[in-house]
Image 1 (tube, rainbow, N blue to C red):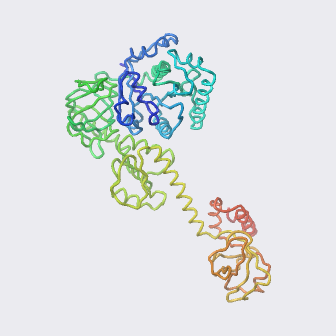
Image 2 (image 1 turned 90 degrees about the vertical axis):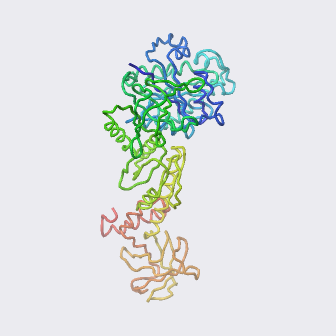
Length: 571
């Protein structure tokens, strides 16, 4: 049997995800929510007859015959909910609708949604919403292409400008997008459908594309066991005033019944419980039922759900396969919640799906992860981070969790995965520069100086002479060479009658050098260079971004002098 595809709506906050569903079933979701933004997951069944009604004669015109039983559409309040739509090896969503406000364009959460869609390899289309708000737009009850062609030229130009602006941004993300009617190959191009959730313009085209893609490319993955044991994923754990702790879940295979025994994955141990009640979303709220068939959104009431966590797998079991199923489910959980590399950063998240998404995005950036786990930050997490030898690993990334532990360890908190990644990359860049800068301080810097005529203050023990710093920076303890041979170390520097640790190019200073006699090894007018050790030279080559142009050229000059005796010096 073919089940209905699971379609998830994702996108930046307030770009119209909920309003799209609201219009489809004429369900008022947003008006009951704080700030008119959905604060909970909402799922509805869209039967095939409703889809035919929405598409109208468009299906006949394009000779499309629908074989799927409908769509299960899920609106998510944030990407933490979307990531919990997970199953082993990928995302539970068969296809996604990425909603973008035509006037606001791509926003941070849009980018995050794209990252996660790419990570899970979830096929998606783009609903370019709120075209009715384009200045001068005239709404009409007709198919989209007719509506667009009948708009004033200024409006068509504005729509095209917005459309190609977004196409350009997505192209920079290696995503090839084209307006739905210009797509030549759906396996290589993402369809973008201009629409309005307020007027329903573009809805026939949006559902025509979604159902067409589902039938053509997803039919084999939609086959289910009609009478088999249910499999699903926990989306949210909630406290109900009447029932106590409940879980919202998506069942993607089999049948789930009241009195079924189920196993839910856990952080330490799986949860074994028995279903007491099942509820499915209806137009006016929830309806109690005896059973549900895949694919379905369902609220489950059962004992011992206090430790349930979003994103965890769920499976119906019988007495003879409890232990086997426990092991299978925990193996899936442990694939995410594991100590991975011997050294690396610590990652924390509030759910299995969020943790999996965050870990995967970090892995794509070649970030080593020492520990990835669910729950608030603990003393052990702090200890693990503090014990890291690499300064770039002394950080905790925390998604939607708290820290009740006082510590000087760097912690990046956010309830948006994209912001965590972005802030982490900025921190890494800043720390690398700081570390490299500190490393530079410990190296012998390139310097070129001239012994000034008439400024020999002492010939020996130590020799004190006037030096004109021609290029670079001279620091105390810098070794100096003449004609490629070591001659002395700088014991001290005096500039304008003050003892200093360093002096820059363009300045003159008195320098003291032991174990040398002016008139023998050293003469007025001599040109000296810093005698850079080979290991310092190799490091300096990697840190040239911290040197000015003149210092870089001087570094080459010093290497040329050194290579007269050793052709491979510093190579």
